[in-house]
Image 1 (cartoon, rainbow, N blue to C red):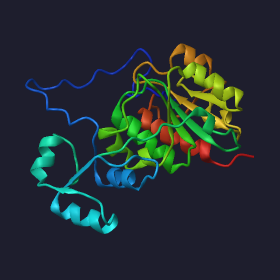
Image 2 (image 1 turned 90 degrees about the vertical axis):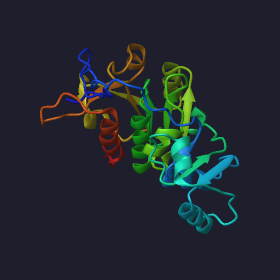
Image 3 (image 1 turned 120 degrees about the horizontal axis):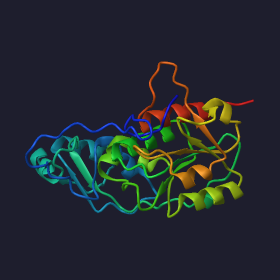
Image 4 (image 1 turned 90 degrees about the horizontal axis):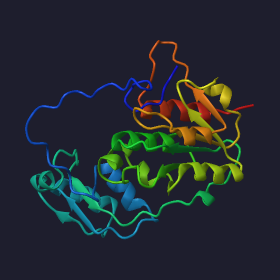
Length: 263
């Protein structure tokens, strides 16, 4: 059976992280920046975004941007300048201070047969959220729903991990996930919560109708009230004997299963 704990640990058995070496922690990258070729290009190509505030690029990347985006104003800098601005980031020679990205409203998600939404219940790791956005875009999900206060911003390491998906799939932020599920239920959506102790296998819980796949946070899984607002709790069968999957891996499996045509 599969759990959706973000750190590969079943409930109440969260695995401790590896010990960190003593010494000064690396400086965090500057807030509000995007970096990486795919993330930056997707942001520049998104007509819904506001005008970019600033673009820094190495000479080679400046030439590539000029070819792809004629007339784009770019500040050409050496890689060392980007290393200082974005310590530890794999910036691939460019960084963007983007314009604002409008958030989606729940009302835009029409409940139609075969449509899939992903809701994340306090999943906080930027790499995992970014990977989930990438999978959601790849499998044609209608959108992703995050909690307003307990989810990372759609910039930085998250956007890099999403490989451009931040600008390719609608993302809604809500204050209360339980109320959001009530609103979606009234609109015709059915909620399936992923849990290692779910009563059904995931394929049995899906019927081809509009579905919200609800995934829980690292360590604790779905919170009680959120789980109670799901129509059914389902598990991903794991005949190999493992008890859990990383949440981004579980999301990819669930999205693939939900995207399959149903009779």
